[in-house]
Length: 97
Image 1 (tube, one colour):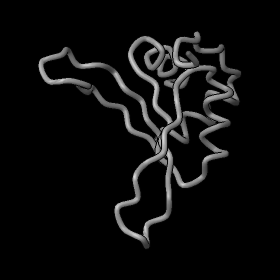
Image 2 (cartoon, rainbow, N blue to C red; image 1 turned 120 degrees about the vertical axis):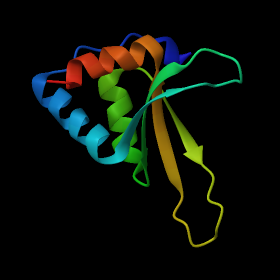
Image 3 (tube, rainbow, N blue to C red; image 1 turned 90 degrees about the vertical axis):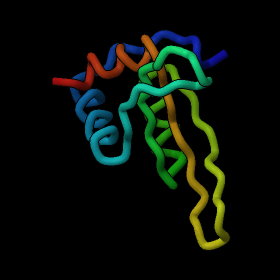
Image 4 (cartoon, helix red, strand yellow; image 1 turned 30 degrees about the vertical axis):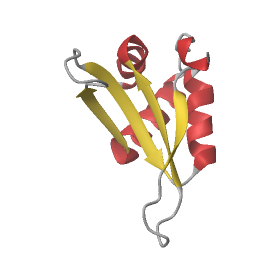
């Protein structure tokens, strides 16, 4: 499963670029996947530009991309990149400076 991979070591330029994407388009949260579970660290980025999220996933080396539902016909189809738990922490440690 692609989500089980280790997070790659980012170059300073990659880390800065991904930090900007997270800051502009992303969310950092503590979420529960199921009721009663402990909260999990989650970093997600939503966009209508799938190639951008494919780049993020390729550079980071982990996480997954999913399609978001368009509830109205006039909404542009969008996708979300998400990474959680220790992998998310590893990304945040690299992009935080």
